[in-house]
Image (cartoon, rainbow, N blue to C red; front, side):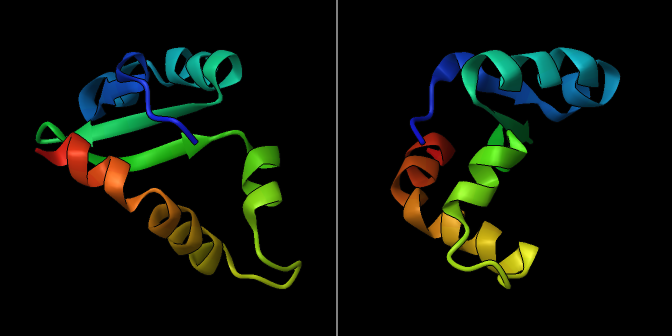
Length: 80
């Protein structure tokens, strides 16, 4: 997953206008939600989430950790 600066959304904007963020995910594949100007959450299309899961019996937490670990360098750069 590539992180595009156009996919960044503040947590307050996501809270106030979630439908806009959902449309962004539909159009661009992902949205990174910032908390205190640092990447905190990733919203992705569920089908992409399923594709990245290691096994069918993987828990949501394990799959999320897998996704985050694959893209750790991108998140570290965004956090600077």
